[in-house]
Image 1 (cartoon, rainbow, N blue to C red):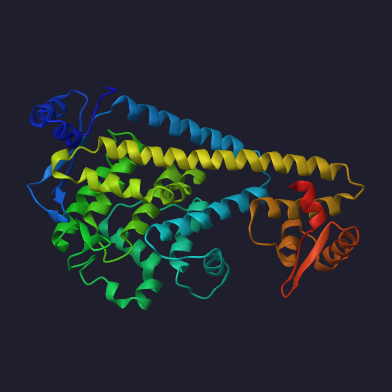
Image 2 (tube, rainbow, N blue to C red):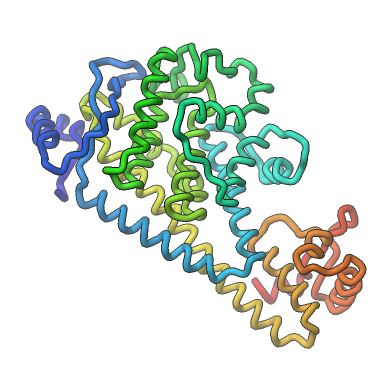
Length: 402
């Protein structure tokens, strides 16, 4: 199985791909998905439908095990974090995930855009998608059992963007009626389902597949991601919506960190990600999705590895800072105040307002103000702004921690 190659590559090597295809389809271990695609060449559907299938080759099985073990490691590491640090950490990777998912589609987003959408009652362009990702961090993850639920989530995520770009408003009963091509530069590379009737038929088949119990959950999630993008039911937002649903599923089945590191990993390998979809849809691969599974699971694993490294580095820094604080000649309240500021410094890019700190450590604002003033005199804190009143750890303390 080490020399197991894509059928397309075997074709270029002048192998008998019809014979090889039959071997694969007749293999006792083959998994046939009951999901059908029309293969695509140069952005057009060119032949009769074929059924998506895969074989559980060694690479597939190894990646499944590695991803599950990584998830256990992530959970063990995250359990070492104090509650404040954990909340900051989850929030930061959520913000990065939203920025990277938008960036994959060329939608420029800043951290300020996301924070404004998180912290205001006003509706911003990204309010919908921020709200949905925030639900992931709060373990309020929706299951999808109908086409109507997909449309409802889409409306919740993209309603503000549709107001800005009204040409993307859906014009069918649930999805689009018009034709959508996916392009790279001046070239068409994919054609979504051409009628709403076909979209609805394929979405129903996909939901049936999502509820199957005879397939590993990771493989099911990867295949679902491919098939949703193949259908392309919306005029805009298909990629971001698909990755959101993928993240929701991974967060529910594995852990929140894995779910929120998907787009961050994909962003650095956008070309590979795109090729996985395009190659799977090519006629001479005859619907085999084995290599898509390998590629997507490699990206999931890469995201997990970045999370593990980040957690290990920051936990080490946090332990060092705790030891440093324990040796200071300060009362417990001042140490608690400093420890929250340090957690903010290590795990967040946005400073902590005084009123937020008062809520975290459960003290009155006058008491907090008095202690902060003393910590400023001792050169542990410095004022960042007066409106809203905000403090951060001093340069002296930053130098100790860095």
